[in-house]
Amino acid sequence: MIRFGDYLKSKVIHEAASQKYKIMMKRPVTFFDGYEKIKLPTPAKLSSSDTKMELQEVRDAMIMSNEKLQYERKLDVDFLEMMSDLVGGEAELISELKRQIDTITLKLKYSYNRLRPRETAKFYGESLTPHVAVDTPSYPSNHTAVGYVVAGVLAKKYPQHEKELLKIAEDNANSRVSLGVHFVSDVEAGKELADRLLDRYSNNITESSDTFKFVAPRRETK
Image (cartoon, rainbow, N blue to C red; front, side, top):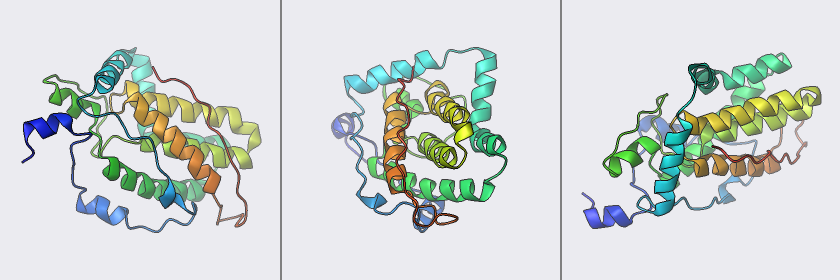
């Protein structure tokens, strides 16, 4: 058992990946050459004032109307389907993009091993009940990374829908904080990861040599 003094000083509390996630982390990644070299900023220490401030930001963001809450809960499970419906298909491409990004973000999550807001609140002797369920470490936000990468890939193929795709990606990213499952810095790291993955993207389904950069718009999540 970790000593309490070390617990307070630690950057994260280490959590072991389940067998399911260990298997997922071994899946091949072919769309994003050199993704292993991606490094993200180290998240704030658990006991830091920055983490305390971010925890309060989460609490503030979770106060919303029932209408907004229902929309964000829909985004939690349906944001990729919403993008697919918008462009009229591409389900196979979207599914494979998600599979490979999930593999990458799981590796990063268990590398940084940051506690979610709920567990962070418990560390401070408080309670926080998120609006949706999660079971992996917090940093970076996988929903954010997947949303912006898929939006970027689809926007290149369907430029007429770029604005709407980005709106879904942005709403999805922002919702991670107001749903109570991510800190703002988790979301910003997810955006940075998406940008770097899009730098490396090679669409092996239809355009094997096509690569491009898509810079997701940066918006402070409140």
